[in-house]
Every structure is written in structure tokens, then in C-alpha cells.
Image (cartoon, rainbow, N blue to C red; front, side, top):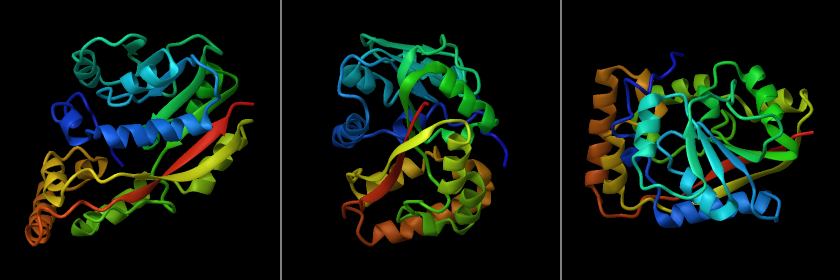
Length: 252
């Protein structure tokens, strides 16, 4: 599967297309708090921070956070937000984190694991960056634990694409445990509705989900037209909620 170049694609609309409501953000922060140490402050890494949709909230809840993002354009969008105490953004990626060894208490990877090109190297680099006992919060779509949102069936090719993009859960766990990590928690987090079905359609039109980059323009249009017809039947109905997997690993 080709890698998405966020400096050429998606960065202009990513923040809007992937925005979280305040209620959704609170649910995720509470879920992270439940699997992190209780002491404060904690030093964090937001690996694959993108346009910074989580980084300021992490800093507000837990302590100083470094957002690590390889895309210049995505970082520019994040840095254009009002300055927040304890937040900084740097160039880097999971395989090469620009932070000292044993300098962070936790790292969050929220829907960024599938973008990592050299996963074995990232496993060791994350261990280098975290202190002993540090936690990795891995919100990833696993091929065998996928939330399957209600609109995905309108893009028949998406199932094959996502199967190729995402690893099964056991494969991810085996990769980390072989390198000395241990699993401390696996749960699902029910993210509140993001609004009406029309709201979801409007965001999907921005094409900021990874699978869009692997569809042809015709496949994108056919799927969106199908979805538009379905949404038109009841556009103001609340978009369904679904449970999303969160894997927590601890550095040995």
C-alpha cells in the first residue's frame, strides 16, 4: 500500500475532517487517564500528532507533551493554533523520535500505527524514549478488531484496503512482547456520536480518512453518491456510536 504524503494531501482539511467534539475528546482523555499512572505531571509524546487534535488536551490533563509529526504542513496547522502551556511540536516519526532516552512517561499513537513504515524499529525506538514502566497507548484499527463504521459499506473496496492497511491484534502484541513490552490493558472505548448523519457526510466529503487515498477518484465519487442517497432518507438522525479498540503496553 502506498504511503500518504500529508504535505501534498489532506493537510488542508484534516483538522476539520477529523475534528472531535468536546464530549468525544473528554471520553478519550478519561480513557487514557484510566490506564496511565495516577501521579501528575506526566511527560508525554503524541506520536503522529498531525494537526494537534489531541496534543493540547493531553497537556491540559497530564502535563507537558511533545507532538511528533513528520509532515511539515500538518505541523504548521497544529502550530497555528493558540499557544498552549506545555505543548510543543517537532519533526520526527515513530522510528526516529527526537527526544532523549528515557525522557517520557507515556506515548500516545492515535490512528498513526498503520502509517509506520518500519514497525520493528519503531517498537525499539518507543522503548528507548520511554522510562522503565512507561506506557504506550495504541489506538489502532486492528484487522480483526475493527469498529466498522456505518458508512463504510458504501465503499466496497474499503474493506479490502483496510485489511491490507491494518495488522491483526495478535501480530501487534507479538511484535511488542518479543521486544520486552507487556500488555497491561485492552479495552474498547465507545466514542459518542459526532453529530447527525449529515454532519458525518460533510466530513467524509473532505476525504481525510486513510482509505480514501487508496481509492480511485471514480471509486470515491461512487461511494459518496451512495452514501448521500442513504443519508438523505434521514439526514438529521444521530450518527451511530461505535466502540474503538485501545491497547496499552508497558515498557519493560
